[in-house]
Length: 140
Image (cartoon, rainbow, N blue to C red):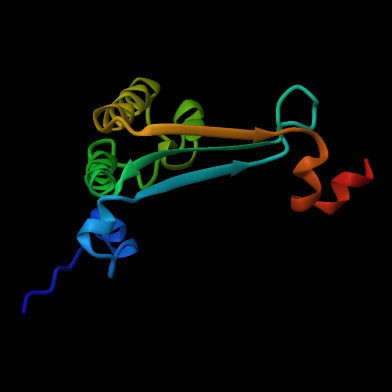
């Protein structure tokens, strides 16, 4: 029996549907959503809560996950991608020159474009979301 020392990114996607027969898997979509939460709406100009993500069938998520990981590992190598870090040279982009950060952003965007996921975005304004994250915000 062979044991792999590294798990492919697509293995995590497949694990989410373990035990679901192929005919049922092919009829399902998995939504991979990443949320970013902050108080950016406290100035009254922008919504304080935004949730955005992509939707793809399972097999296409698996391929996307592997391609995304390969791109992260290409030079300049980064552990994860966060657009604000790329723009300002923070986090995994600390010490990487601007022209290389821009190239990495372009390459990461290329992975998204090659897989053509369906995009989804939602937001909330005012007190509809603030108290659920920080009750003291409703005291303003």
